Length: 220
Image (cartoon, rainbow, N blue to C red; front, side, top):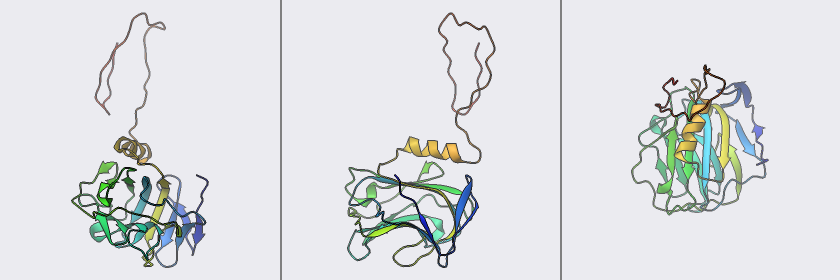
């Protein structure tokens, strides 16, 4: 969408999950999209990134206004490296899944356009959806006050670790989309691949074949 991050502090580039990643030292580093205020109101949104951290209770992505109920939007780690999205006044957590301990983990958080409360939000870790209990029954009202920031928030909870392939989209990504992105980017990539076909140059009748996902098969 034409928005780019500016490095604050001494954030450096290191080998990442896909090419290079940004290392944040937890002291004075953050990434800031100058002039871009994130997604406002209760509009649909999706956050995706790869992250490698051991940090607990640290900010991953934030924007909005911390002074008024429901006006901030914050994604952070919490106890056990589970994920939490907060709007001022409450939040929702990834109860069944958590980040790996200082290992590359794919994170996706989606929120639909027709949501009625924050409980309509979904967490995905490594392409799998996390099952949740009730979280917070209010609807976010993200304000266009603070710039989009990676690695810090309104309480100065600075992240220590690596981030790569960070995205914020103004749509709700589907479960299939999230799984496909993870499968496409993970180290043991497992999207469909094509082998060689032997046989006549001309096919004179319809061919049909069936198979199981991620399992090789042959046909004649």
